[in-house]
Length: 332
Image (cartoon, rainbow, N blue to C red):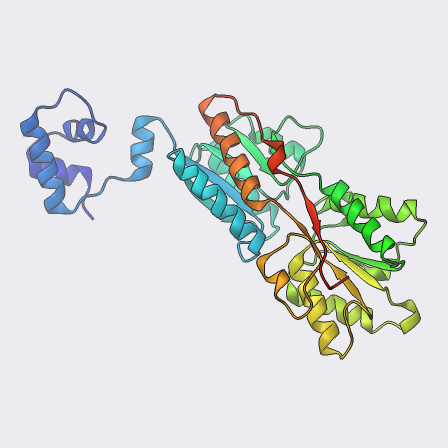
């Protein structure tokens, strides 16, 4: 692969002259420009994007942290972020954490090293003090997450309130024994903490029990949902819940699949409520009642915010675009 030194040698010029050409320096003669361009064409030389950023002292890469791209929510979210970033002349460096704090810290180290100009965090694994400590190296924006007690800006929705409303909806439909699935660890922190608070608050107001055998932590995908359903259906009939509130559509779909596979009915034997409103939720065997997240709006608003932070401008978040809604379907 050709280097800038190879280009300089072929053009019969100094490396510094070629460097000035690559950075659009005005004081280069047309003759030298032609010689450099011809040498680059003959050598099939392409300048390094990172090197160009370092020379220009402007980084145009935004780091994006997600839990896992296979989750459709994150796929659509990243798509929205990337499209908006391109409009501002930025590119993305995407990193999946798989819920591992070490992966998250690696991206934050990139911010410290100025490999990225800013970081959008769509999932959080580290302690808030650790994350806030990295904010001195460059802007960090949270997307669909919050860190209470810190100054880190966020683009988020009221997930506690919609979870409270969704749980009340189940109670109003006549369900009294409600199981719960979360990707995190309940109210002690992690994924889904605000959703869990809304769920717990609604049950407490109706004096309904929260039984350990009806609570499932660290569940993320359809396979996890199938395991949840197997455990619930293995309970004696009198001890089974009559509904499940899942913090993920993927888990909810897995639960429905297993219930049907065992020859039972949804919602008659077990009602299921999901979260995200993924495209597949309306076309499965029993369409899933779920909560619609404004995924595209979250991505757009987060990108506009991080670009404003990087470029030192101001941006007022359009909160009207960030409203959550309950979508009622046959599963409840």
